[in-house]
Image 1: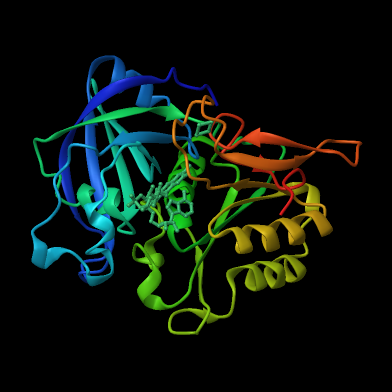
Image 2: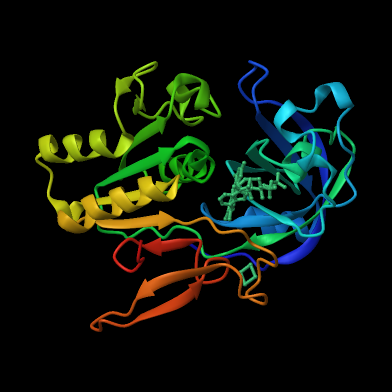
Amino acid sequence: MKKANKGQFWGRVCGNKSATGKGQCFYKITLEFEGQAAKAFAKAVPGQFAEIDLSKTSLPAAEKIPEGLKDACKRDIILRRPFSFCDITTKGNKTIVEILYCVVGPASLRMTTLKAGDTVNIIGPLGNGFSIPKDKKTALLVSGGMGSPPLQHLADYLVKNNPKINVLTFAGARTKEHFPFNPKRFTKQKIETIITTDDGSAGLKGFVSEHLERWIEKSGQKESEMIIYACGPEAMLARVAEIANSSNIECQISMERRMACGIGVCQGCAVECRLEGSSETVYKMCCTDGPVFDAKEVVF
Ligand SMILES: Cc1cc2nc3c(=O)[nH]c(=O)nc-3n(C[C@H](O)[C@H](O)[C@H](O)COP(=O)(O)OP(=O)(O)OC[C@H]3O[C@@H](n4cnc5c(N)ncnc54)[C@H](O)[C@@H]3O)c2cc1C
Ligand code: FES
């Protein structure tokens, strides 16, 4: 995959609404880019992300602020916030970027007030993104909760650009209320999806990693022909990495860190990694060396 040149750009908001339609904390914002920005984002690969400036974005009206954020929302937004892309399409000379987000604090709360016609300042595309080896027959995409956006993008990308790979998605969440989208329709492409919830309120009961492990055991496929891509809570990533490493399946995991700069300057997003052939570890930067890492290298 050819990487795009990053830059600081302005995007125009085309839409911003609840992603699940149930009044929960999940929203999808659609941004439109023109000129150099359109070229840069058209080349963004799944797993890359952008740093969005929400410092001047207003808060919602008091009655729309969730109880748990009434105090936190007063904090000034000094730093940009990182968000990955769940879809990128081109329309003539414009590039349309979709971001699926969850309201967890002051910046994501402010993001809900952006409306069609507003502009946002955004630095991107950043990070390395997923890579796609040519020799794989099956890609297993494993997401936990809010880890799904970059994997939705990857699933669509694989179907479009690597039609020989069989794509299977595992979408997990704590309960049916914790899916940021309708998991039955993981992508635009009607890809087979195994849905799991910890409490069994939707799909299969249990952790998504358990069901991945069972599926691999039953599949009878050669380990060397499979690849796992995962994004979600760190405990889930650790377990998926363990399953992949013990069964010798190549695995790429997308890590999350708080990211103050997103471009390798502040050194605040360290991920401890093993050095190949050595017992020593090094710290890599999640924003520039990642966010996608080989499951074998990350020390959990
Ligand atoms: C590469 C990358 C891609 C991301 N993609 C998405 C995405 O597509 N959609 C989405 O909703 N979110 C995504 N995030 C997380 C997003 O950046 C945070 O939710 C956002 O910064 C929260 O800002 P806030 O001011 O609303 O909340 P804050 O006040 O900054 O955080 C509220 C709480 O959320 C938790 N939190 C915040 N940021 C992170 C983080 N990076 N990792 C773990 N916990 C965190 C903390 O516990 C914190 O107390 C991504 C993060 C990274 C690093
Ligand atoms: S966020 Fe600053 S170095 Fe990674």
